[in-house]
Image (cartoon, rainbow, N blue to C red; front, side, top):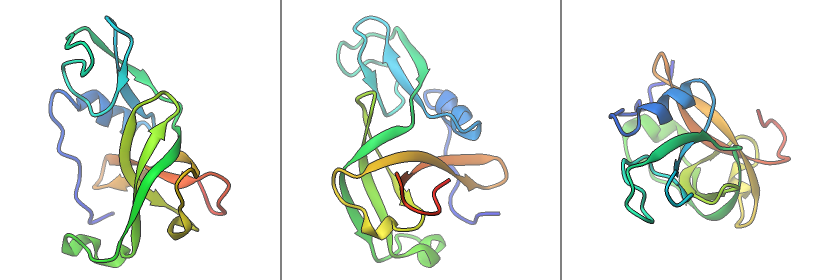
Length: 139
């Protein structure tokens, strides 16, 4: 079992974390204006409507930017450094931050195609992360 921190779930993010546990990447879509967005929130960031729905994203995206973490922010991350944290532009439009996992993760570059994968946390939680498309050892 992973010793990494588990997600903190609140009413606005419950469906997101439930989807992740089932290995589905969920994002919000506004029923009023159609804008798709991430982070989970109760208001549309474009039109402020509360008429939102959860939709499943494809899990495919492109690296917008990234950084290599070489100093662990918490002791639980000591065994992972160095690791990559990236801003990923999802095919559906929203941008999200996640780690790039798998073989070749440290070779990540802007513009790389990535696919969602899921990292277990605790006994039941999973966190959406990404792997570089075409890298060996991807899930």
